[in-house]
Image (cartoon, chains in turn green, red):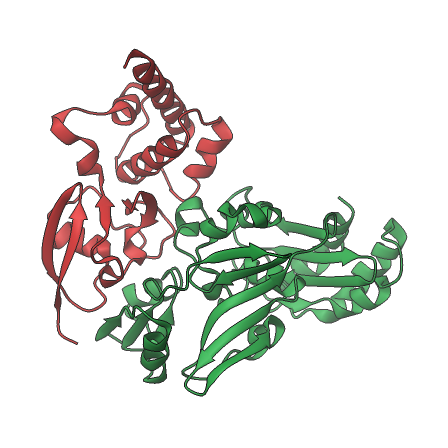
Length: 262
Length: 162
């Protein structure tokens, strides 16, 4: 469909109003605009977050609050989020990272959206605004079920992992700017074991079977071998230009091991 | 919503033009302002030929709905050649044989300009990462990396002389 209007509201209320009228919310445009350019957009109105004041990144008392319109570049430049830099550098190119947003990452189909995999491992909370007011939701719910029509993710709140607890590993065809074959993000410390996977299902998923086998056990080659095999129960892999479903399932244990025992 | 008048500072000069809803920054630069250095390649943000600097940072102009950057500042390759003189990056591209068919060149030069503005002494890995969103099907990339390293060297030399 041809685009009839691009709204660029300068407040959150404006975004919610435009979104409630059926506009497609757009962060940096890296996913929406290719559809617009090819004439295959399913909507006629776009609502840009670029001017709505949602681009801030704040870290205090061990909690990061990242505005939905913060670019991946802005996240990586914040000194309090340095642990995410290696992950961010595996996502697209610096040019696209200047445009792609944190909020947009939550609504992208795999094998894109590695930051959403990170946020799932971090058990982030989404702050959501809608016609009925504000609410918080676990990022897992937003990734699995989306949000209601008219709602907008305003920000993502993350408790920073303890030093040494953060793990990230992405298998891709090239060293830079390539989509996920397998992405693993994990927070693993005493009493906590969360493992999120990308590239292995239409949306990012938690490797709950692996988490169950690893909780309370030390990370050893033996425990990881067992957990990595078990993780195959948690995935729903797909074929695409980067890898086959068979290959993704086959190499998952290898990459899970490499993520957690570098 | 009808077409609207959009105002941008392009290469330091305020420009106004009429844009249809959803027109990309790339289409406006090329079709309304006649600035045709930025190229339309894939129109998906994957090839980098349309890269321009928006408020100093490289962006794929084909992914920017122009209304969203109204009032902002845009720099294109035409703005690099201010005064008719090639700058260090452009002359290094010629001297190092970093351009063949030329289709990727304007995008490559714009990411190089942004890189060198931010980091005057980049490593080869920094250069490779900077151009990782720009596809070149002629050179095999090596001459482009060499040219950007050479441009950085020349620019540092100029800075010392000044």
